[in-house]
Amino acid sequence: MAREALVDSRQEILRTAARLFQQRGYDATSMNDVAAALKLSKGGLYHHFQSKDEILFEIMNHAMEITEVRVLAPVRGILDPEDRLRALIRRHIEVVLSPADREITVMLHENHPLPPALRKRINARKKEYIHFVESLIAEVQKEGGTRPFKARVSPRAAAFALLGMINWIYQWYKPEGELQANTLVPQFTDLVFGGILA
Amino acid sequence: MAREALVDSRQEILRTAARLFQQRGYDATSMNDVAAALKLSKGGLYHHFQSKDEILFEIMNHAMEITEVRVLAPVRGILDPEDRLRALIRRHIEVVLSPADREITVMLHENHPLPPALRKRINARKKEYIHFVESLIAEVQKEGGTRPFKARVSPRAAAFALLGMINWIYQWYKPEGELQANTLVPQFTDLVFGGILA
Image (cartoon, rainbow over all chains, first blue to last red; front, side, top):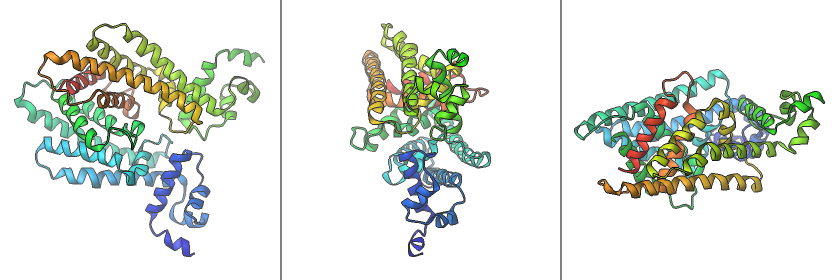
């Protein structure tokens, strides 16, 4: 009981489960494994989450929450569209590279099929983010109209490209590598601005 | 025995296994499931592949083979670096969107940890591809030197960005959507050229 009381936050469960899912694969990790890693009884774990799918859903939901709080909320207040896009690129890369959040956010790319109702809710949040980026790129392209400008790249294609570039980082990133947030942010920013204003 | 004889190609096994892995998840799919889907006995399947890890490795290896044959080999012969990069972008997108190869190539992004020796071989092939793209981008930037040109985006960061954009397509692509190869190829090409020559 003492230990059960220590697991006061569902977040600790989500974080531990996310780490196990990545190390062993989602399907290969059982509810027993998650409970054992937390030194919880199986009943103690089921008190918080009814199923492994619910845990995966809550991890993904938490990842979208992190994106909302760390990326979207702070940039919404920035008036200039170019500055807003710059801040979004920087903040999104920082979330992807954050050691504290990486094990949560990388789970957004887990391919395990969630039950349709849960999948719909995650997809709705992902779509919201894509639409935000798309509108923002459209604004930047519009403002960039004073330059010799032909918008050959649509906001939608550019939004998918931007999210792909950033969300793909986890596939190649090495903590000891040359490319870190401070070198990556300006380069990806220049690439995107060069591309959408080309 | 008659049916066993029909499964004359390891490719048919790899293709069926890849489809099952995507539908159910790699860990949730057993060798029995793969054998049953192919109407093979378990022994018949083990005659071709000794383990599920070997199947996953061979799927990934086959995906890299497809990339070699459909992307790298044809573009190597193109003399002009800009044309070579254009062809690489187009061909890589076509492989990612090819209905026949998609179930194979998407497995390159499977996160299941392979045994170290097998993982090393796949990673070596992936690295070879990244280096090819990186050198090509460097050449294009060098040739582009006649324009008002500052190479703010390094070939390496640009190579990762390009691969991220293209390899991410499977996350959002819809066969009935507006963005298809014919609309996507010119936009991603413009975005990359605008970005690396910005």
